[in-house]
Amino acid sequence: MNSLRAAFGNSSKGLIVAIFITLILAGSLLGDAIAAATVIGFLVINSLTELKLKPEQIGMIILLGASIGSIMPPITQGIFLSASLVGIDPDPVIKLAYITVTIGGIIAILESFRFVRGKKLPPNLIPEKSVIQILRERWKTLIPLLVLIAIVLANTLFDYNIFTEITIFAFVLQPLKEIKILQGITFHVVSAIIIAFLISCLFPAVRKETKAVLKNGLRKVNQTVQIQLCAGAMVGVFYASGLIDKVALMTEGLASSMVKLGGALSMVVVGMLTGSQTTSQSVIVTFLAPILENMNVDSTLIALGASHIAAAGQNMPPVGLTAFVVCGLIGGILNKKVDPLKVMMLALPNSLYFLAIGLIVWFI
Image (cartoon, rainbow, N blue to C red):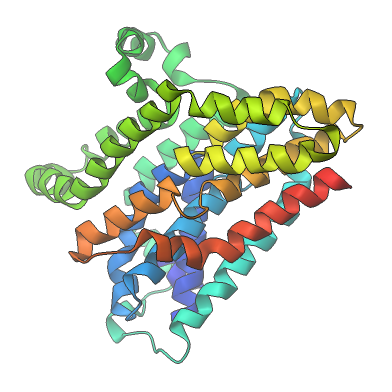
């Protein structure tokens, strides 16, 4: 973060750019907006607060940065998923996504510039050292992050999952896969974060402050965890009541002329309810892709559109789950009430951009 701030200058707008790049990188590595917002978001909240940004404006920046990162190439979980569901090579989709997602990121950054218009960067936020000086002095602190990057890259680019390929990891994690309440730990991104945390404990500075690190960490994510637990119960109710299945059936029953719009609407609704572009694509694209192929829509464009529409849906008002998690995180740190609906409305233009891109490529 400090290196990016040093690279982009000593201005308020430069700080916004550095924060967006950090969040987008995290979202790309982790492949999930909620994970990126939770892991990286709390690191930038205090800096944005010192710029006199409102809590909802901070929420919008974190929400968009993490969400855009979740489909940003080259490590783009959203596009890899859509390509696999359609059954095609993801490379052509990724090449197009470099353009569309980068434009979305630029739009988000430009949107956020209005929050700091006329505001000078406080002296304590101005980096005193160059990028080279920062990296030379603190490169060791990047080791846990580099390990995390290596694990995710190996799985994403080379289909090598250390948690199944290396015996000791497989031995530890395999039993956990049978325990539903602990299954989330076995997800390779979560496991990679745990490994990175354990590696960070090898540093004396971390070990000496272990108690304080755990105490402060738990205190800062307290409200977020409460929201996630409630959200998990809510999603469970949606599935148990058959709501998700009804949305899928609604799409299947549409006339051919309405399949594209209806399919897009279904993906937005599922993404909005679950806060996950992964769930949205898994539920809808599975049966929608063959229908679109029969309508002579190019497979590459089907995958591209699906990833963008799903990314838009997870942030849509009025019940975008990702925004609730982000607001819980900000509220817990600042001890202020943060309105998730306002955050979603601030992010709406960017969400509409990704929705529009998805529809345009489907209608070409």
